[in-house]
Length: 269
Image 1 (cartoon, one colour):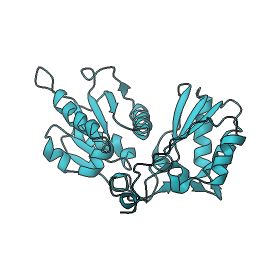
Image 2 (image 1 turned 30 degrees about the vertical axis):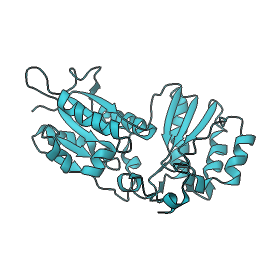
Image 3 (image 1 turned 45 degrees about the vertical axis):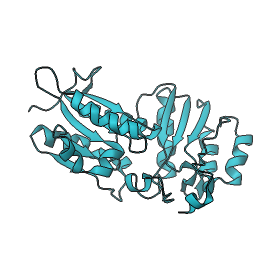
């Protein structure tokens, strides 16, 4: 098989997957590949999956089968995201059509894995390396008026009903300087609203700053008009973050604070 020239990324589930999908597109674009408008036009299709929302996972596997074309051909198929992390090589046993499996902490290796898959090698990478994948990602160049910015990943809470700690790993905060730089790149590219993303976004901490301090700093970017953040956890809601909602005009009056269950017994398990 020749190296793919066009790609399509299909993201399912949460805002973090939307962000990851954008970053994967930037990686592939940096390799000279072009985004395709439809599956039929794509040499490579990346299914960026969600493991939290059951219907999203089922839809992704169903989509794998639908990628086979009338003449029997198919694009290279990459399974990415949290289903890929949870199932690893089992995903390729479940569907022989899947050429490569890459977890959410390893997608900076996507171009290399695509090159290997184009040579006929089935590849799997679900490692959670200590070195941040963000160091290997290209600079942000263009964005719409609203943009996502990942600041924190993973979860240490281990709620009994949730798989996030197993698919996204332990809580990790991106360095303050990296976030500030990416925010400035997004604004320079046209963004006027930035949503800070994290599985437990209000657990973010770096350089003696917490999320409230980060928000106050980003609010100083003159052309940035609105700041949001999601998803926060009740344990990490601080008095300073609450105060920021009153004191920072650019911070929108919106709080995504999922309680998940009214049962203390369930939450403690």
